[in-house]
Image 1 (cartoon, rainbow, N blue to C red):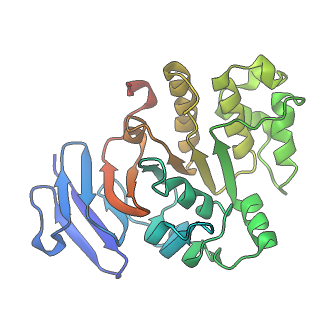
Image 2: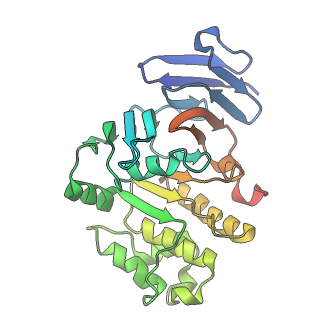
Length: 288
């Protein structure tokens, strides 16, 4: 198989490489390629990588530059000098051990916590320096959240949980359309206590989608689920991605990373490896 890879660095340079060699000008970082995956390691200024499967967009949905965040009580840097572009339609997975900064980064991109310094742009909006009111509006208008805990209202039915979020935005998706995307129309009048864990998570996905968010953020969405239920939920994400939704997911599960277009692995608040899946696996093909 022949393909090319374009590497974009934060100093505005780009490198075109082939699959049969490691170009000297990107050493000591390393570039390796197999039939289905391209892996790059050692880049602290890696923004994005594209293959001949798609053309790199001229504008990113999110641009992160020189981002830093530290915990107030310890001054320990959770994210340091971080650079990344998130492109429209990306399925991006963040992997790494507990405490490496991946969920912190997710929360900063989602506007849940403010960064200390650097730049986090969503389209033309700069998040760094926004007050609570500005961040709330940003989250409401642009971001759909899915968490490990389903956070459904127990006294509301599935469709009522979705409607609760739909009422926050001017032009929501029809509730039934959101339910259809996750194959849960027949359960719309059920209460959370009448649903399995996987069904509740699918309702939480529909709840996030009803706002028609530009960016979907999922933090360990299958961590509390068994294998079969996890595949059920991941299949729902597959259907969502077909609509062109941009998805960033945090997971400890390396098998799930095989579904993504791009995998970012963290160590000490920085990228130490980026993998490009030339042929992402379908959820039904994952095994763990």
